[in-house]
Length: 214
Image (tube, rainbow, N blue to C red; front, side, top):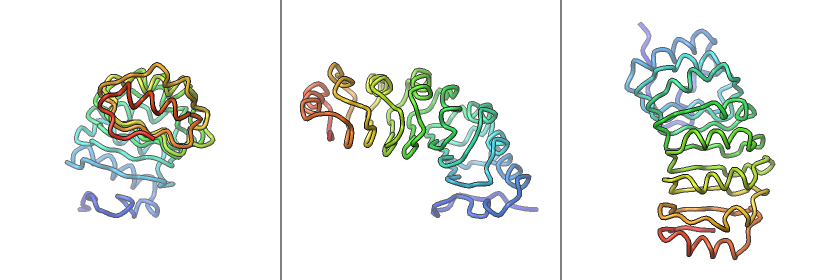
């Protein structure tokens, strides 16, 4: 009888998935919901499709999922929304806009959409409105994306957000942060955004617990 793959320290949790058949991948992922596996990294695994993510549905032990660099459609939504205990999600690819607007995960505290050049306000505004328990939001290197002040203003106003990294979001400017104040924000990175020293100075004074700002 075959055994369930276990976590490893390698860059990809399941290095053999690239050479597996779709039916084998679905079988492996289906069994995960019966395992104590807390973290799953499938970054840029070209064999992963919507069916594979659906197989993860109801994996109540899964706390962290990285499916960045994978092209998916809205057909995978029942699989994602079924992960009711998920705490961290990395999802950056050409499909993010299609999926994010409809993802609701009540336990989610950390979200990473870094390196996604296609992400827009149309995806992140409804996502942030539905997932207000985020303590960490990473949007690094979304250099050519269409993220604007609308998304960043909503992000900065999340009630328990402690870390915001928008390095490279070039359409974000001073307007977003001029009225922002937060007692929980501890880390904010606005490198390569269109913000001035005046904005950084405002944040330093308006966010009393801020430990890192640039």
